[in-house]
Image (cartoon, rainbow, N blue to C red; front, top):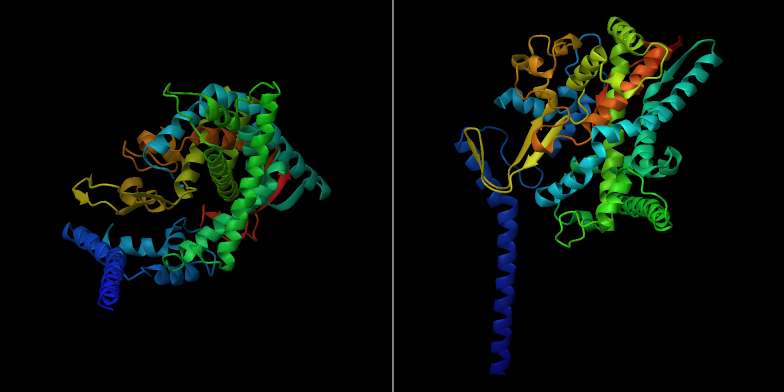
Length: 472
């Protein structure tokens, strides 16, 4: 009996010890560590809302977002969209004055993918760009012809389809129709993730069989299945002797077998290839369609700039098909695209997390601090851009980005530094070509029915982009 009792006492003490350790770990995670970080930042003069247990600022942010999205803005008076997109952050900055891989994993993938976006590779992609753009232009001309020579069209879905088609052709060698289901699934997943971010974070909640969690897991399985099908099809073709295609998928598949660094290690697994494909489907399609839709909206409102851009396109290309070299000589078109990217950057917040103690100017940030760079606020800072910071004025870029920013890093639609978007040249060439062809074939103006309501994620037009197209 004494031995049994002693055993139970020992077991009980072990269990109590485990429970206490677990409780202490949870307490440290949800309260002590966050409060320590808060105290460290406040000691350096950084202000902000106090840490709230688990919930944080989610409730306040949700209320502000709901109010902000309840009614459209007035496009004719101001492009100050920050209070609508990031109301809590905008309010915090005014009160207090203030997509990714990390480390070697990021560096490895960057090295593998870099060659795909070299200038010569981009030149080879231009015929695919043309094919996708021509299909959209023909569809718009057909719609306009049904009503004489003009039509009212919400161009947002068309531009989304255009950029999806371009990504499919240039990155995967397939048509938009083949990847259509995948695009729909990824867009749905993006919206589910956005909704989850605005909800209360409860540890372990994502593992519970809730309706949203089950749907997200199903989407993940379906997307992986579709991508595996495309990848296996390409691998079979390569195995049958078909020449390797110099697109993104070809580059990724080659990296599975190629010893790039001579260390005998496999570069990427099939799961790595799938994740990279998903990223390019989302990032490559969504960002460029966002750039094009706001460009059409702003040029539909500012006819003088539309006329200037059209005159330049006619001067450079005349009756010839737009080519790669000609696109690089479109100064006015580039100025317009830069100004659209300044006012409506596809990614309105860039986030980074410190993994070790980091010195940021005069501030010393401990490990575990998330630093948000609000692009929409930086792009509208009147100290950086002048009193007309909230106005559409492409003229500010007439002497290039460096002159417009006074050589400061204040124009960051594609990020900056070593992690700058690898596909920025791809996106700009695609946007220049699409806009050039639209200007050559149509005059367009913003419909009176347009409601100005930029909304996250990716700063989309909440109620679409109704444009009156007039065939030339």
